[in-house]
Each structure stands twice: as structure tokens, then as C-alpha cells.
Image 1 (tube, rainbow, N blue to C red):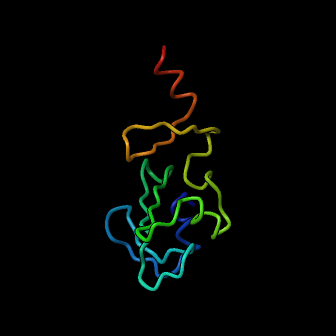
Image 2: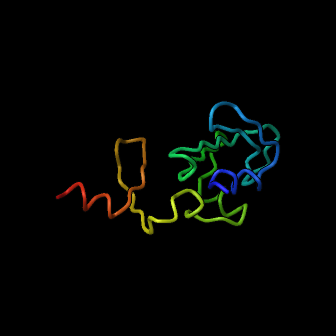
Amino acid sequence: MSKAETILERLEMVRKTGSSKWIARCPAHDDGTPSLSVTEIESGNRVLIHCHGGCGALDVLQSISLDWSALYPDEQESYRPMWRSNTCLLYTSDAADEEDSV
């Protein structure tokens, strides 16, 4: 089962919106209209989630009894925040940073 499938099976009113993209009701707030975007990248190894109602990713994950590991590949154990711009927060593996610095 892919990372996205694990998340999607716990959500309500899931609808496919494109290739590897879905929208569903956000479980972290009283969502009358689906506002949670779920995008699968890297062949199911990584998932992006975004609540258009403003809920944080951790709030969404905790409300369906998951944690950060539900979004990332199993083989990469740790991620640390890295700012790419003023509005975009990415998470990178410490191992990837070590390879870039060589």
C-alpha cells in the first residue's frame, strides 16, 4: 500500500482531481466542503497535504492517528526543516545534505 493510500483510506469524501491528486474533507476541522488536497509524488513514496481551510499538516495527520512518517519514505529516517523561500517550508533528509556538501 502506498503512503497516499494509507492516508486516503482514513479520509471522507475522497475524489480524484488529477494524476496522483485527490481532494477530501479535512479531518482536522468541521469541513462541509472538501478542502484537503493530497498529492502523491515519487511513485507513492512521498505525499504532500494541504488544507485550504488553514489547518496545519500535523493537525491533519494527528486527527487520523498518523504522524510525519506517513508523508515520507520509510528508508529515510530523519528530516529537518529547510527554508527555501519566505513562504515555502521543505523537509530534507540529513543524508541528502551530506551528499550535497561533498
